[in-house]
Image (tube, rainbow, N blue to C red; front, top):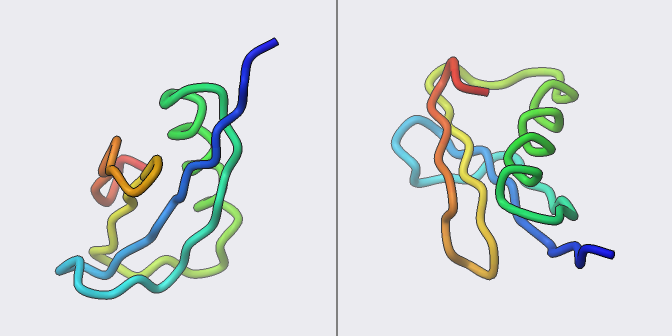
Length: 70
């Protein structure tokens, strides 16, 4: 059985200085966390133009997705 880890998915404004949405996702690996973070963004009613998505594990960024990538 794979151990799931808690990742943080954070939507940041266009210059990265402000978080405007975030959530925790449980995933078995980085790829799984990235896909779950993408699914989470689809559930949001309004994503600001120019925002970007950062996925973190234990405070370390594992992936940044720019507009059009999520």
